[in-house]
Length: 305
Image 1 (spheres, rainbow, N blue to C red):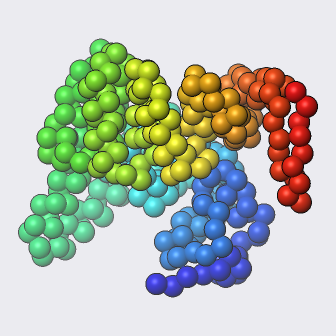
Image 2: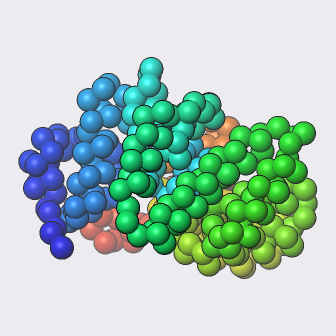
Image 3: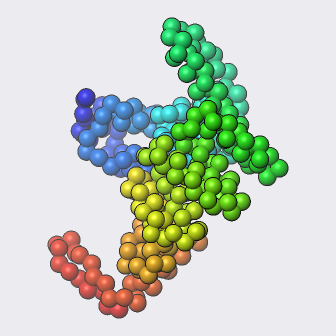
């Protein structure tokens, strides 16, 4: 498998070091010194979007919204992003999707190309699988749409159940159905669905985050902390997971452990009421406890209480 150094990537894609650093800071790409072919493909997509004068912040907002709405792990690869107006839309499951506004339009171009690719396949099993995948994606997107309206919430739940009957390891459907039960305070059902999602896709950070939420709600704090820790391990810049992990640590009286995550949240999401609360909690911990930090030279520096 080909590996590329950071300098190779900058040279091949004609990127400026500051641009790559910016994408790393916003969490669009992982910080690393060695890249594979898939990494280059993702960076090329980001470069092309950037060339249309879309900011990294807008790309990140659409990226996170698409991941939450459609359940795809990496929207830059699993869907096809493109500029539309001043934002980003995605070609996905025969639709043009604006994940921020949750607006959909039928994508005739994508539909035509999908039909061509299906016709060209000679394997009947592969053809059946491809058709089923498309049907499940369309069913999932329809469930997401109707879920937004309280009057059609049960319709959405039924769609998610049908998806899980066809494909029990469909993690996004399990998460969304779990959230419907969570909001109805049916915590046992929600927990079971979230756990099934973590088993179906052990690298899906949102599944562990939501599992942490329901465990926290039912006062299973030790297990909630473990779930939040896994979400942060999978996505180190997962701001909400840091925030909830800090809260859980504080409930257990582990304020020193909470401090790290309050500070991390404030760094990742520095503006707004939640950031203000995180900074306030961090200041309280620093002022009320005698802590020590390690300087860059390795010397222990006490912080006066």
